[in-house]
Length: 135
Image (cartoon, rainbow, N blue to C red):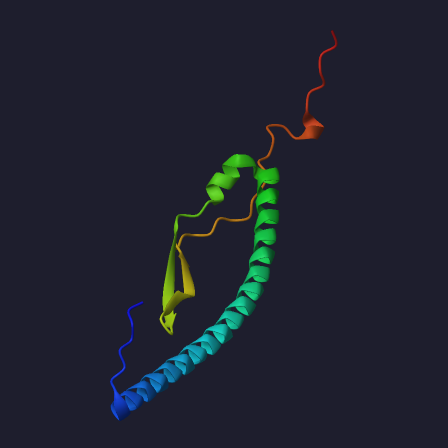
């Protein structure tokens, strides 16, 4: 760091006092920024916890329904139930020079929702199946 040259005499004293005041002001601004960012960090952590819990509940429900569909209708029914791509948008926000994702929107393509998954009937009901021939 280069050597700081202080003007001689009273002017130098005033110059140093001005620099000291500017440094104190800068430290106060940084403290204020840190408090604001800590508050925002706490808010976002709470929101992440809440939405994480909701996301896991929705995932469990979707997994249950996917398993039911697979068991009742097979892979073909799963392919038929698949939706077209979804459009996701993220809105960014900036606080004190720090950018972060503030909100997200999700727009599913509009299609006629498929009906409930129904098992495909076998070719013959079990009670009318032919008995096997004796050998």
